[in-house]
Image (cartoon, rainbow, N blue to C red; front, side):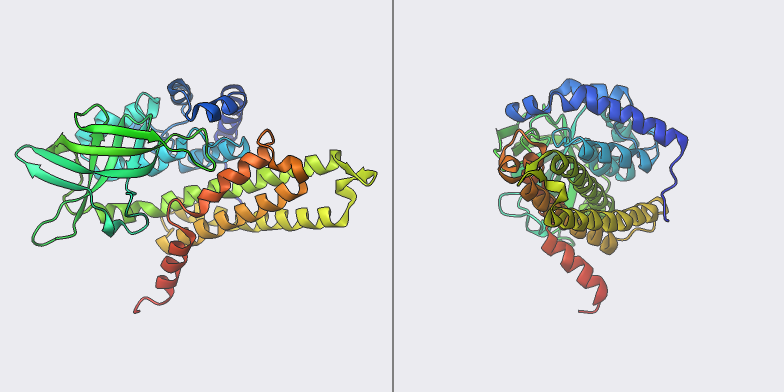
Length: 380
């Protein structure tokens, strides 16, 4: 049986993460859902325990081990916690700085991200441009020793809390009329503002915002990497981003199966536990099998990523399949809860609402299938 290279240090770390989830997150998450965001101090507490930037090099305050990131993400899912977007901050945004930014930017911000002192967001999506990044309208124009950024972004996770934002903007030149560049924008700069905290179907504890850039000026050094190379940088980091979503999705499905198995053993119908009914048993058998098969594939992708061999197509397969499976499994489990499954006081109801967006963000399932198809028919 295939198994990832877990060590005793990983197992000890998982115990630490589980304790943190129990003591600091699970008992407070409902209040955060009512508030629409998590408190900043939870980020600092996570940083103190080494739960942030776990895959980032220890040169910049991280742990340098991707398996620690896997553990944090899985335990968030097992706890039903969708508010603290640690994996977005640590494993989707930090790599842009670590792999592409100047030493000055890395030294200034990565250690603060590791401690939770600085919370990060990434701003790509716009009101008129989602999966098609070539359609973004945000512009950055050089003016002397500064870049001037003008535009609007939407659906930005960590948008209310973010201290720094990685912004994708068009920087057209004669040779690259549609060139995209990435910029680090501090949230205290004049012209930067947040819109409302968006009301979503799920992810109620996760702050998701509109961001406005009204002639925001940043120094030349806030350009991440080279001008016009932003799209290349985005594409290079997408395999890990999509893998992280797949990891969360399969863990969330596993959690749903566990919750439901316990529920049907205690709940009775027609004078006997639901777990004795064939339909219940068969549905849960199907759900467990789907989760187990997906787990095997996702773990295989993790192993490839550890060896730096995971490509965009395979990561897209993992993201597509795991998120579609997650919603199927959670929907099946919700049905077995009956009317109680539709009550938000039950974790299965919250998980069902939270799972729906997984098939959309990070690239829709349709985009994932197109990426896989292109790898199969490269000349078309």
